[in-house]
Length: 77
Image (tube, rainbow, N blue to C red; front, side):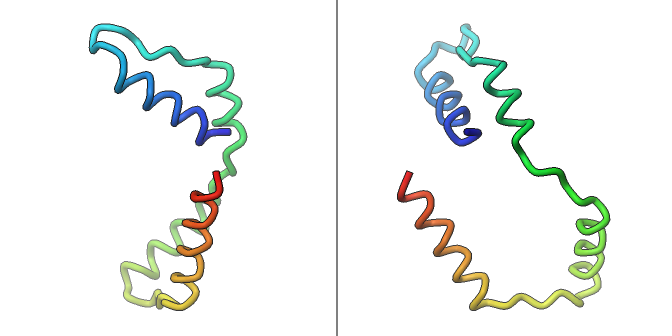
């Protein structure tokens, strides 16, 4: 849902003159924002510390797989 709202915003912004406001359904935008997952701040801070300390190791094969999954999901929409 959020992706469709963003696509609509981009289309409105690029096609509209600079003096007009984008035509956005704020109710739909609020619903899309509400559908986003909540952040686990504790986990984010812990991950940040591991990255800063050089303790975070990247599994390149897993990362590549996730990127392929993401690209495939974007192509199918």
